[in-house]
Amino acid sequence: MSRPVFFLLLTFILLAIDFYVWQGLRFAIRNLSPVTQRWIGGTYWGFTLITLLAYVAMQLLPADYFKSTTRTFVVAFIAIPYLSKLLAVLILLIDDVRRFLQWVASYIFPSAAPISPETGEPVIPRSQFLATTAIVAGTGLMGTFAFGILSGAHDYRIRRVKVPLKNLPRAFHGLKIAQLSDIHSGSFFNKTAVKGGVEMLMKEKPDIAFFTGDLVNDRAVEVEDYINIFDKIKAPLGVHSVLGNHDYGDYFKWPDVTAKNNNLANLQKAHKLLGWNLMLDEHRPIRVDGEEIGLIGIQNWGAGNFAKYGNLEKAYQDTGDFPVKILLSHDPSHWDEQVLPKYKDIDLALAGHTHGMQFGVEIGKFRWSPVQYRYKRWAGLYEQNDQFLYVNRGFGYLGYPGRVGILPEITILELVKA
Image (cartoon, rainbow, N blue to C red):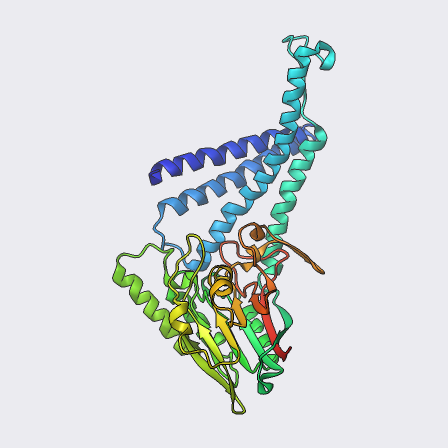
């Protein structure tokens, strides 16, 4: 489908959603005064017009017209109202299905519905309850998303996890690991809050720190304003990092291949400026008091349609003498696809990528997020046959500049002898 055709089709769908929700809203407020109804109608259509104009601008203007942060907020300004309207549409559809069934029944059983004296047709009005519920639910969802931007985007939480490893050398018992993932620096809008998150991490005094990919959304330039914040992350055994799927610039329209390659080179330079040891399909020893474990870091490798740049076979070579092996791999699907079936002696893998979809519920041991229908392992610690995977919920955000329920994470893992 060509881009102009897709643009026109999506515009038609959005307008159809607007008019459908308006029918429900108009019914829900029909008992209010005419002045109030006009105010509500004017507000609804005025906001809708602004939203549609923003959508048109996003489609017609060049991809690099907006700064990355501005673009994130414009996309959210478009998406949030329509996601909220879709919820209202689902509830209104329930009512319309009910009305349709009643309409059919009225012809089979004429007394099933009152007949209009003017038209002679059955009169089956909307349900006031469902119409009101649809509007309240849609408005509530939009309010929830707005709250997630104002409150959840930078509400950093430290999650502490103990990982028992059978072959852990005595010198590594109690080793404190700090993990960050999915910074997405191009989305940040509160530099002070980001700085506060880094300070929270450093107060934990980790022995070693890992970053598991997605430093930027697309372009290396996005991290420039945050170099002097994230370079404060230090640890006695170093800060080690890998690349995520967004770091390669695959989702940005570059003028040519050279520009894309230069962007990746600049991103790798950014890791050096941060003082991070970027691992590109390689391994290195981590030594403490004469004992050592192996650290393996690969480029992004994701199941399905995600890029498979990583080469675990290459990185794994000559690691047989390490009693414990830790893998940094951005996408948790890699654990199920390659690590579990082929690399039985990789004791712990650290990943990110999912963000917990930045939306969900976590109350005690109960966890739910829409992302679980796409990813089997999407947040927290997983164990299978004495192998462990930890999936970080992400430090930043992408697309939606906020978080609801699934808050940004700083992970502190402690290795213990099993």
